[in-house]
Amino acid sequence: MTTFPGTLADTHNPCYTYPVSRNLTLTIDEDLLLAARKLALDKNTSVNAMVREYLEDVTTQAQKRAEAMATLESFFQERPGRVGEITWTRDELYDRKA
Image (cartoon, rainbow, N blue to C red):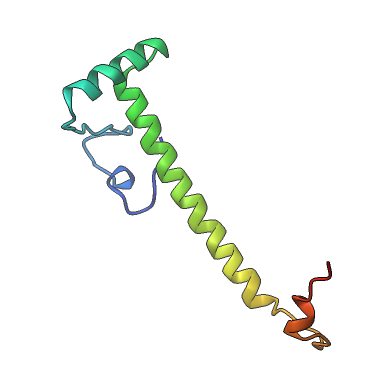
């Protein structure tokens, strides 16, 4: 399970000496639940496991995206772009010869 500093999963409860999973109650349409159960059966898993995997994927992707953005920002701050002398005009760029 992926945990992030400062989240409930990261807090220490002195009653437990091992990680404790939390329950989550969802309210979803009956047809959606039936479709999810069928899909879970086809995948030889449970709806619970599918939801857990989805949430892990979403949070992991969000963290990776944030890290990538921070890396890009750092890259651009450390390496300013250089532009050479402009020797062309806008008209020359869009001059199309048939």
